[in-house]
Amino acid sequence: MSNPSNNVLPLGRLSAKGAISGKSVSSSSPFILEARNVVKRYGSVTALAGADLELRHGEILGVIGDNGAGKSSLIRAVSGALVPDSGEIFIDGAPVKFHNPMNARQYGIETVYQNLAVAPGLSIVENLFLARERRLKGIRGALLRTLDRTAMNSFAKEKMQALGISTLQDIHQPVETLSGGQRQAVAVARAIAFGSRIVILDEPTAALGVRESRQVLDLIKKIRDDRNLSNPDQPRYAACL
Amino acid sequence: MSRVVPKPPSELEVVIKNPQRPTMPQNINRVIKKHPMVASLVVLFASIVVFSFLNPRFLTAANMGLILQQVTVIAVLALGQALIVLTRGIDLSLGAITVLSSIAMASTAVYLNWSPPVAISLGIAAGVALGLINGLFVIGLRLPPFLATLATLSMYGALATVVTKGVTISATNMPPMLSWMGSPFVIGGLRLTYGCGVMLIMFAVVAYVMQFTQWGRHVYAVGDDPEASRLAGISVKHVLLSVYTVAGCIYGIGAWLLIGRLGAASPNAGVDYNLDAITAVVIGGLSLFGGRGQVIGALFGALIVGVFRNGLQLSGVQVQWQGLAIGALVVVAVTIDQRIRGTGAAR
Image 1 (tube, rainbow over the protein chains, first blue to last red):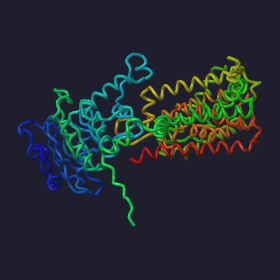
Image 2: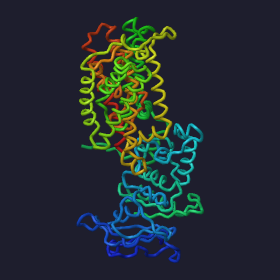
Image 3: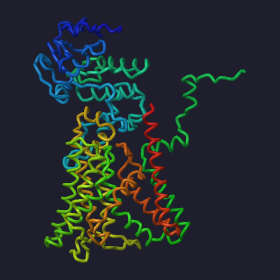
């Protein structure tokens, strides 16, 4: 890739306990996310033999490797989907422990899963707010848990526009009517729309054609570069996997 | 042999050939896809029109009221079934739950002389408990809903027979409140029962909940894609458990309606209700594969079945043929559902 900050690490170094850093944006900036000596075994199989990972502000990091190399295990450990046997994970230098993806989400780590990201029958807005719905204020929201559709719609419109995927005619159309790239965009929008700091994408282009892959890669750069997308106090960082 | 091979259209040509305004069939397709119950609404009105031409007695206030009374119990049970179907499940035990709840109401009121409100509350609570047990089998033991409710159908049915020793309790022995749902009132020449009103209110409430509340949308999400819902942070187990419990509550209220409708609480009632409720749900445009359709469709489905039964009868068609007609409706409904999901998944 042409962008100098898109680092690509050959896999051998991952299992050989190498820091995945390479050329970074500013090598002096502190690590926002750091994993040290992460070990995960499944029975007799060692999936991760002391892997390290370092991620700096504004960095797009790609992890490349053969099947079974441990990419997914490393990523799942960082996103909370997997609890490592040993090793440490630091956010902003402070040690953290994740027991499930919700833990990681509390620290601003959002994961876009490969194929399971969106519910096809639900609309774009509903997918965006899945499990994070906004409720009406007052008794209807508190007691009946009635949704605040107006607020959700305008928020969704704004975010989709900021992402440059406003080509979607209608935010109420079901996700299954979208192309693969557009679906991925919805999934990415969900990951960044709620103040996340680190976005993990698991094989974001695996199911996509060349042009759609291009769109997704552009989207990832856009997330990093476009300050309008992010709250200035909380710049976003993407780990692309 | 020279054949003109059409050049594959360039992107620009495609755009020109597909103008912004979709064609008629596309429009119809889109509407049905978004609101599968529209198809059932059309069938409902079409059948009413056809039957009213076949027999002048069909489209009278008296007959319409009769149809509404006839479908009331099935519609309520179909409402509970619809919730479970939306989560990709199916409930084969609803007839047994309803019967057991109605027996709980009637026997505590008649044999133990409990006050009617307490007896009715107990009956509804029994429905809630039995639904909860279904849910626990489904999420705790991870049984497929079909098998879990097949097992509880057998259990609950046996329990109903054991408790009553096979004896039917007639409404004439019950306090009037238990059969209140069957008592009639007249509105604009339409003779309805209070049960009809309660049924309509229940549909309105559940339709609101499903469309406008967090819980309702989570039920749709879980039915549509359980794994995506889990990863998004929805507790799929809690949603499923709550759905089976709420369905049990609906069956419990249905039990009260059943006593009013039958004028009795009988362990032998409710045999056909399972399949009738599933039929209503399917004809109403809800997908057995979860996440598609609106609960109000179950009402339309029940009404369609009621209209067909009643209309065919008035037209002098033998009872045996009614089953054939309703079977044909099911085939049509499922075909539409398959097409909707087929085109949806083909991208």
